[in-house]
Image (cartoon, rainbow, N blue to C red; front, side, top):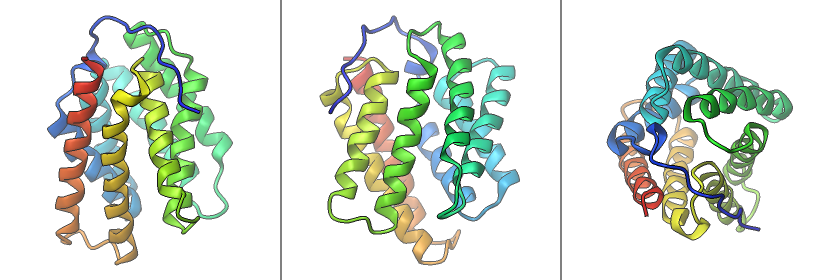
Length: 203
């Protein structure tokens, strides 16, 4: 069931990101995550958190470290640790709430975040024809909640990001070649996704 949008806050740093920067940096973060290049992944997460949320540098560094640790807890398949990932992402969303003076519940935002990780993993490992739609819905619900937007308004952003994940999954299945031109398509889809999200949160 879609998440009902909360009352919309005033314009804030996390609502003023550059879609080109965020899309390119997320593509780099995914690439280094799947290649298990954890040092490079941390660098990518630092840049991504800064570009996407524009927190202070101390909060950015702490937040990126929490995101990396959450991803490390999530990474093993099939024996990962979703509870640890949610706990770490709750701490990340506490930092973001403090930076934004936002009204969202960090535990709820973290649960929605890790839910799309779960939905993506199910789609990635062939959970059936409805798995892609479940991933789109999970992304939509996270955006609607964390940005206090109407679910329908963020649906295009969710669909484009899920499409980028499909490209990434095929790239992973093909051997994670860093010179594969599929990465350029993934990056372009992510930039389009974040452009759609930016437009949605300013409606």
